[in-house]
Length: 192
Image 1 (cartoon, helix red, strand yellow):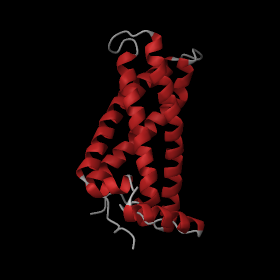
Image 2 (tube, helix red, strand yellow):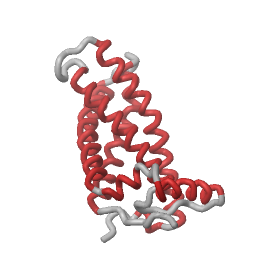
Image 3 (tube, one colour):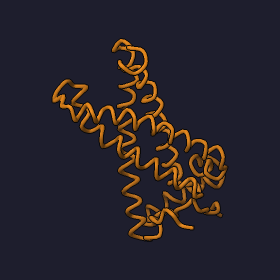
């Protein structure tokens, strides 16, 4: 028997919406900012984008903290995001078998494959937010004027994790689209 599927709490839906908005902005803004680090095409717009990326990144760190507070506060959300035992783990196997047969996993908090992927995405974004927070205070003009080698390691790790966040972002959009085609009610964020 599978774990009971529960609706997302309203607070979690709001935090998810904020999470999606800030992560999307940060990923898209990062595409044009790389020219600054490579010292090519240093246009004023790119510097403005870089500063917006840093400040929205600080907002993202707060949203990530709010999401973790939700995870701690709601035991079923914890089981959904980290379904590594019991019936939640069985749901992962059931979901993979269902995908092989052309069936999408059910939506909602139930653990299983979607929950595991959500949890991995949360961990990746958490790592990026933590590294971004550290870099915010190490980059010259913000906090102490640190030598370049002090923020190169967090920056490289931040860039490395961004690859996983991009994969997660595209996968999340793709699966949400598939679910919406199957059942448009999935995209109704503000259900009563």
